[in-house]
Amino acid sequence: MTTTTQTPLPAVPRTIPARHVAAAVMGNALEFYDFTVYTVFAVDIGEAFFPTQAPFVGLFLSLMTFFIGFVTRPVGALVIGRIGDRHGRKPAMLLSFGLMGLGLVGLAATPPYARIGLAAPILVVAFRLIQGFALGGEVGPATAFLVEAAPPRSRGLYGSWQSASQSVSSLVGGLVGVVLTAQLSHAAVAAYGWRVAFWLGALVLPFGLIIRRSLPETLHGEEPASPVHPDRAVLGAHAKVLGLGVMLIMCFTTSTYVRLFMTTYALTSLHIAAGAAYGASVVNGAAGLVFTLLGGALSDRFGRRPAMMWPLGLYLLVTYPAFFMLVRNHDPITLWTVTGLVSALSSMSTGAALIWLTEGLRKEVRSLGMGAVYAVTVAVFGGATQPLLAWLIHASGEPLAPAYFLMVTTAVGLLAMALLDETAPAKV
Image (cartoon, rainbow, N blue to C red):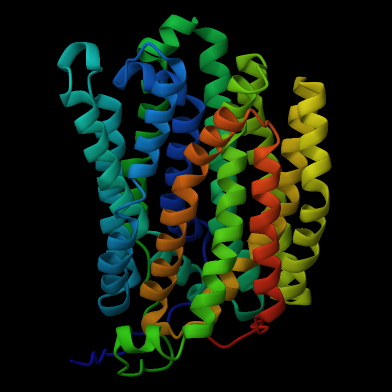
């Protein structure tokens, strides 16, 4: 076994220019734009690459392909996370963003099953695997960069932009879905409209690479790094932080993907019109953006644990009544209200969760540790959430299945919060 000794570089500035924040969160934003668009157009993607006589089978195969991308996330977290801890946050973020773009463009350009047969779903799966590898290595270095570069008493607000970027992407992805379905016929959306949504996301790729090349390096700061072996540190000294981190990320990941599932849920289970269903993604994104940043700011003032626990406790209490009201009413206003409520409360807690986990890890293992916990947990719970819910609703005929699922995972998150140590304002 070897140790890694790093040569200190000049200290980074203790404020973050807006362009650096944008560069750091751009990868996470593109990830969730891709996920939002994929779930919004899951039915159309299923028809393009998985033609079948049974609509549910095509949808299920489409969602399972969505899940496939999560398989390579832990590998990406390990490989790119090590690069982030050994060679710097900047090269790791450049690599993950470039691979992410390759997967996105490849999916948008793949011809349908009707033209190239079995090669179509094979290519789609391959590009999802590439994306999964890239996304697994994105969160650790990017979140570490934000927390390390932020002023000490504003790390919650700055770091919450990582989660808030997901909401921005959900908002934009939902708006794209609303506009495309309003301007194109159903046949046109199924034929090429969904591809337009992916190509629009690809437009940010060259700008993202250019901006990321200008980032300062934060791996080496004012203090020299300790020669600690990454694997030993992650598995040993950080066992409690990583274990509680898994519980927290599981809670917020399942909530995030249930909210992304709301469009498919509204279309297939509640039979709400497409435009109104896509509007749920817009509401989810808008509420998530505002309340994630609010949660991050409150965590700077009152601490990470209170900022996470109180909103999540309310979330647990309102989940069942909210979904019960939605199942009873089946109308757009109720759909948007329920989506906005669960998004606001969940996002408020999420704003502090990633910051707590990042602050709890030493700098020399932060990228790998953060990325590994996030990638493995999201791979197991996030990727499986949507196909699992689709199967549960179809098999049981119980439209309240999402509510029961969320109540269980929320309880796990609250237990983790009761056990964790406060980290604000920790020295990182």
